[in-house]
Image (cartoon, rainbow, N blue to C red; front, side, top):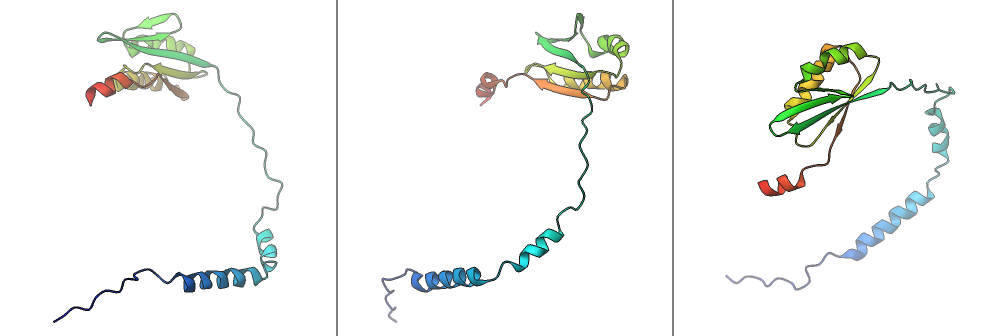
Length: 144
């Protein structure tokens, strides 16, 4: 049993493929696309629309969370506390009329930020924003 030798020319015949592509291009160029113009206008909105009104932004109060050694410090203005509960009376006095921005450094564990969010939620502060520091590229490289 002898095997038949494979032909040397294993390439696709591109001429028929190119011919079909040109025929399709010519076919779609000859179609009257004006019939689609009227259908597109039917889907456009008819009203003038509503104007967007932006609510005035609240004044922002920054809460800084920093790590000093093994301890966390929470700073709001001149008030410094070692726990998020220590700032609760100050936040309660300010009330929910302000937007609170938590600025945590990259070395702060996530639980410190969660504790501050829980403290703000307990005082019924609804607008909480977050701001973080740059990533710790040196510590990430050391772990690899």
